[in-house]
Length: 417
Ligand SMILES: NC(=O)c1ccc[n+]([C@@H]2O[C@H](COP(=O)([O-])OP(=O)(O)OC[C@H]3O[C@@H](n4cnc5c(N)ncnc54)[C@H](O)[C@@H]3O)[C@@H](O)[C@H]2O)c1
Picture (tube, rainbow, N blue to C red):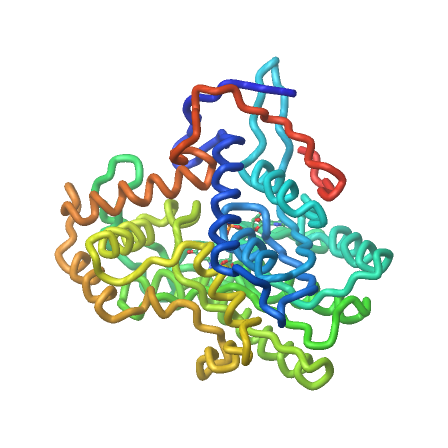
């Protein structure tokens, strides 16, 4: 046993540097318990199936959907994420990221699971996964693409994605995480090169490489489905410009084109399907970095807390996704919009909810935010800290925690620092 007392997190700016192993374990178990409740018996269409989830290792959409799929009857989930082990420097321990401890909890619950800690953008990783599938005689029924990355390297080049708008600069009143104050921010327009680089990181190129490798490797079953997660959000001006009409949205539109082309191939040849899944906004690391996005999600949480509308957290969305695909009568077919995208964002786009959120934006000005936003930030911070295993109700943060758990043979570590 390697134990350590960790009573509070270390942070640098907006980055939480220490994860809490016990908090991560308890949180994962609570998600599993919620998914068990959602699926008291397996869905016949899900039973015995295998998923490959790219981006499965953080408390985000990949892991929550993996949990829902397992509890709905999938026999195996093969996951992949970029996670590094704890390190020891000058006799000090740097904890592993939360994803390491979350993966440990998932492998404890699902010993047949396999997870790769690797750079999913590298050809060597893809080759390794395909080789393992072939040698194990495993075939995939569902590929869930849930990777979110700030940069991608491929064939000797590295590209960074840009959190920028397109066209004119956008000045908007956002929320500052550290001070809790309303703050005016200006998002600069992305250059054509930045738009293209963002597309290369978060667009469909990497997804296409994976789908082709699986198809040409003979690693998929009839009925094979591909779902790539995406976000469109509400139509109101700052949000639309920041995301869907911004550089990131450009990449997500490329995902739409990629999945549409894959859908044409898969539906003809394999009775399969491919689509983008438009998921709702949830609390993640990325939302803190964009003050306007932070304000939007904080106000969203507070409006729901005040009794209007509903907020679906990643596990709710994972359950909704699983039901859409595998409940009786293939509900997903009636849940596609005119562009062929699966819509799981109905609750976020509810008109009454949106009216209450935009109302709070109309007279926002720098300085002290209104009580609604203050409450929203409080709710956001708690959920944000939980992404790292902190502020989890019922966890004794005074007790020593095992920081180097044995991950077992199911975890294939291709990243070592
Ligand atoms: N968070 C939101 O509000 C939101 C809303 C709608 C859609 N989405 C979409 O859902 C998807 C997942 O987002 P999330 O918020 O769950 O993100 P997240 O940061 O929680 O998870 C991202 C995953 O990608 C993995 N990853 C990153 N770089 C990698 C690499 N080089 N190799 C292998 N794995 C790598 C991480 O390890 C992690 O498992 C994204 O496509 C995102 O755009 C997110």
